[in-house]
Image (cartoon, rainbow, N blue to C red; front, side, top):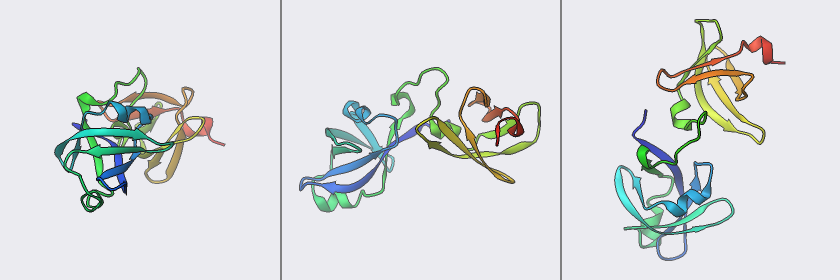
Amino acid sequence: MKDFMSVGTIGKTHGLKGEVKVFSLTDSLERFKKLKNVYIDGEIRKVEGCKLQADKAILKIEGIDTIEQAETYRNKYLMVKREDAVKLTEGSYYVADLLDCAVFEEGSDEELGKVFDVLNTPGNDVYWVKGKEELLIPVLKNIVVSVDINKHIIIIKPVKEWQE
């Protein structure tokens, strides 16, 4: 498992004092109000202020005091230590932990592929699996049988049972 988790990416500057727009990679923007420190390129930085907009957070980060400085951080990831990440409910997983998990059909030893990405849709998440063929697997209890993050294995019902 990864020691650091990405919580956002820095976008454009905001204002004249080095504030940056941050696009969330988490389920909740409210999470940014609680951030005290973030890591950017492995360097710890104090979060000095936070404002929320409809779809992004505006952060004032220690050491970024001008538009020019803020511009150099564009497209960089904001990271937190795993132990500082939001605690998940049982049966929920961090996307970072699901990526590269091998996917197998129940009762089969043949790998269908590995999780390439997790797509968020209004009804449910979808595992995008790349292997011999690409598969989009709805994350539903009647399709996903088990997820073992420690072994990096996901077991699903046979595709023929739920696809179509």
